[in-house]
Amino acid sequence: MEIFQLRRKTLESDIELKLNFLGVGIFKIKTLIFYFDHIFSQFINYSLFDCYLRCYSDLKIDNHHCIEDISIVLGKTLKKIKINRYNSYFICMDDSFILMSIDVCNRIYYYDNFINLDLDIQILREFFSSFSKNYNCCLYLYCFNYFNKHHLIESVFKLFGLIFNNAKNKFVSLSTKGIL
Image 1 (cartoon, one colour):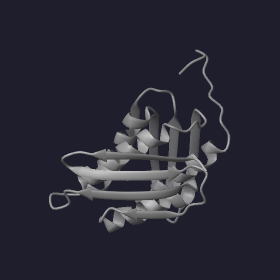
Image 2 (cartoon, rainbow, N blue to C red):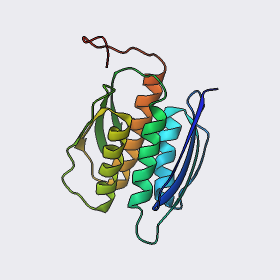
Image 3 (cartoon, rainbow, N blue to C red):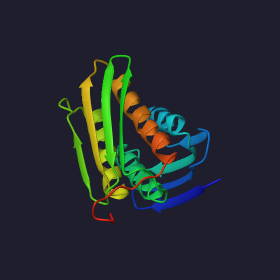
């Protein structure tokens, strides 16, 4: 077992995350944002991490702080494992066709090509932008097609899990500089 945990407590949220990197996809998630619990469980299922996630947040205002702070904690926790530097994956799920690429290069950059920025897509963007800042990576998320927003968001989190599942199985850190 390789279990890491992190707790982040601010005026806006109190988050506890425990991850077993060598798990089988078992999870207990409680954020009180039931849709996010479902979506985040897709990441855990496809990454094959075991996860305990608890979040108390100012949900009377909105769910933004909860989701942003979870991505901060996730990024800081995942930095503790070594994965391949370059990781890319495509997924075609129902009407969604998505590419995600992560370069674990100790530099920060986030890009997506989402045009219709309703609240759900803005929160998705905020999640991955905050993750890239705290994981110190370049993260590209490219959507070729989607019709159903639920399928889009679900496929993005499944793809995120697949990248970490594939990347944790073999560690290669390529750099012409010799250090990242």
